[in-house]
Length: 89
Image (cartoon, rainbow, N blue to C red; front, side, top):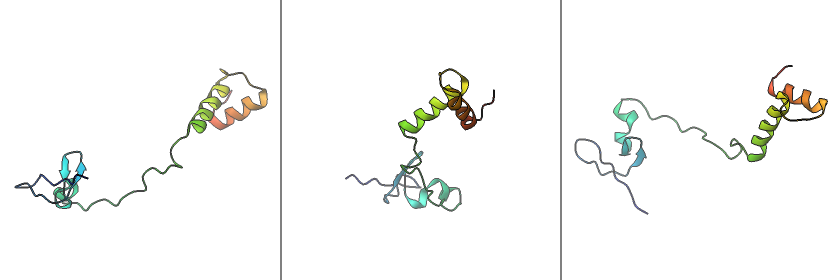
């Protein structure tokens, strides 16, 4: 595993670094540190449960198609799809 070093500062710092949009930076040379701000707290990020699955994504598209009348369905499914997508007649 290659270890990256900070290449910023008055001279290349050489401390262990992580990748930022501006390049490899150590904690002393992060964009927040250079701006005089504290480092932001890590957020929750994306969990596997938050990512759309093909089944849930296709169900949403299917409900929209039924609600718009582009896909044939029985009247009960049509009304349920309209309610789910917020469409009205």
